[in-house]
Amino acid sequence: MANHASSKKRIRQTARKTEVNRKRRSQIKTAIRAVMDAVAAKKKDEVKAALKTAESTIMRGVSRGVVKKETASRKVSRLVAYAKKSA
Image (cartoon, rainbow, N blue to C red; front, side, top):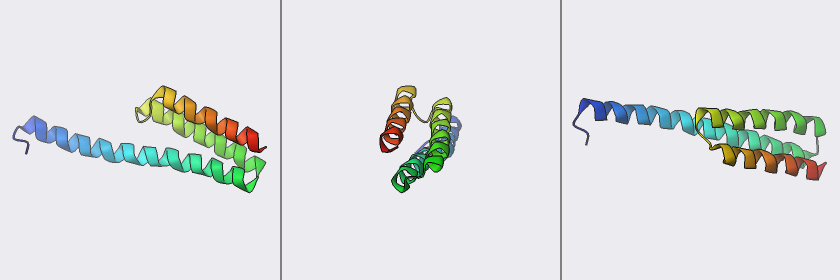
């Protein structure tokens, strides 16, 4: 258990940031799932829109420090390849 005021504050901050980051990671997964669903439904317009949204969501995660840059690039690259393959 934390005894110092600073360590107690650190625990509070970490809990808050963890919750926010969990939400951001969930948004990224949801955006990726939307692309997969659109590809499965074979709706080209929906795929384009979902892909654009997913890419911006993933890259926003990079700028916020939730996902590493290379990981995000890999995810976007694989999504684009998956969308192209199905088209």
